[in-house]
Length: 233
Image 1: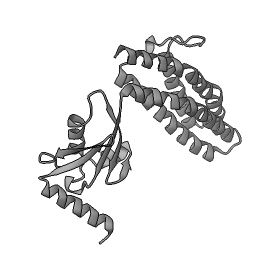
Image 2: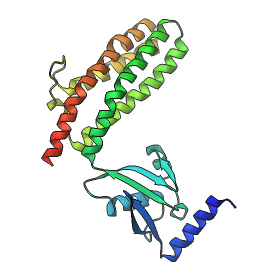
Image 3: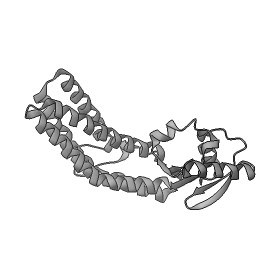
C-alpha cells in the first residue's frame, strides 16, 4: 500500500473520529467544517463558499489532496466522494484586487498574443497551411481566454463597457473594441473555412493584431474604472 493511500485512509479515520469534520484551510487559516450534510466535492465547495469564504471575496485557488485544481478539474471532480477528500486548501481574493491584477497581466500578454497571430499569418503566406492552421487554433484559444477574462470582470464588477471612453483612440468606447473583435473573429473563421489564404493572412496581420495593440492601450482605462469601483465600495 502506498504512503499516499495510507495517508488518505488515516485522514478519513480522523474525520470519522471527529464526527465527520474536515479541517479546511482558507487563506492559511484552519477551519473545522461539519461534513454531516455533505456527500461529494461539489457540495463541499458550496458549503465552503457559504460558510468559510468572506462575502466580499471570491475563490481563486483550490488545492484538493495536495493538487492544485484548474476550473475544468473542479467540474470533473464535482461528484468526487467526500470520503476521498483528505485535505482541502482554499485561497481567496477581493474581486477588485483580482481584476486589477489580471488586467495588469494582460499588458504583457496582449503583445505576445498579437505576435502569435502575426506568426500565423507568415506561415500561411509561406504556403505552410497545415502549420498555420495549427497556430491559428492555438492563438484563437488564447484569444478566447482573454475574452473570458474581460467578460468575467464585467459581470462580477457590473462594469458598463459603453461608459469607458477611450481617449486618443479611434473607438468611442471599450465596447466598440469588443464588438470589432467579434466581427474580425467571424471573418477569420469564414476565410479559414473557405481556404481563402490571402484574406485570412491579411485579417490576422492587418486587422486582428493591430486591434490587440489597441486593446493594450485601452486596458489602462478599464483599470481606472475598476479602481473607481473600488473607491465606490
